[in-house]
View 1 (spheres, rainbow, N blue to C red):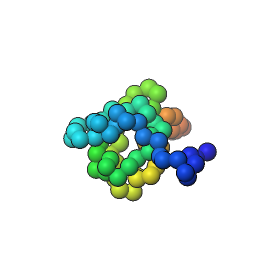
View 2 (view 1 turned 135 degrees about the vertical axis):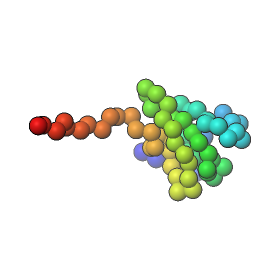
View 3 (view 1 turned 180 degrees about the horizontal axis):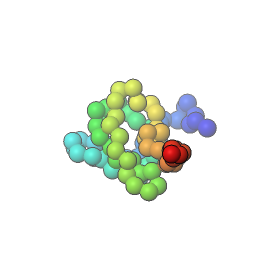
View 4 (view 1 turned 90 degrees about the vertical axis):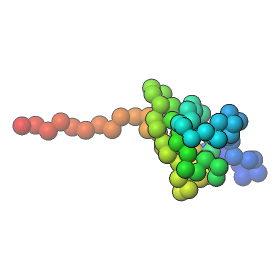
Length: 81
């Protein structure tokens, strides 16, 4: 379910303070919305087990940080000989 239109997008305040650095910005807030000031920044988003590196582009603005760090492994069947 999405957030109401009359409310502002959710954004953790610590992300705005650390967005001036050029290094990876670590975040465990997967429900934070990506804003224009995050464009061309590098984030490490927590997926429950480890921090997953994500580089933000202009096309990602308006979406959530958690959409780009997968929480489940992709299952592949082994090839039989």
